Amino acid sequence: MLRNVPTKRTTLLLDTRLMAEAAAALGTTKPTDTVRASLQQAVRRAHMRNLIAWELPDSAGELLEEQRGHRRVDA
Image 1 (cartoon, rainbow, N blue to C red):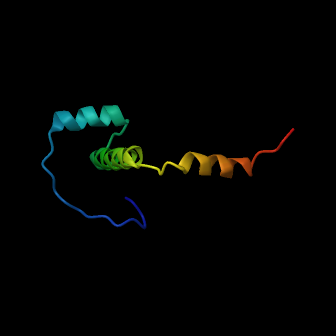
Image 2 (cartoon, helix red, strand yellow; image 1 turned 180 degrees about the vertical axis):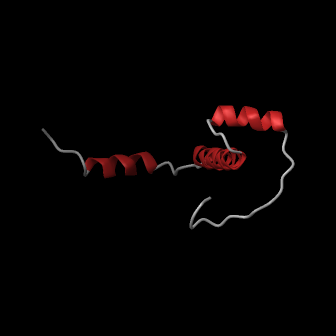
Image 3 (cartoon, rainbow, N blue to C red; image 1 turned 135 degrees about the vertical axis):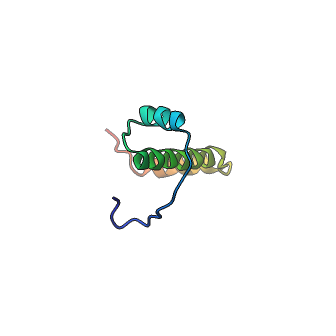
């Protein structure tokens, strides 16, 4: 059981074949772990899509180079 994490006990009707496939793909053995890992992956994918869609201003490249320059050490 998760400690210090808000949880909710619920009943779900799940496709057992799909659960078995998901468990195999995710490397999980318990239904709760499979559902949790699936939810985590869905959230991670959504975050990645948001990052990919995020548009930087035209001057972002120059700003990044300027910031990197402060960390470079000339040999």
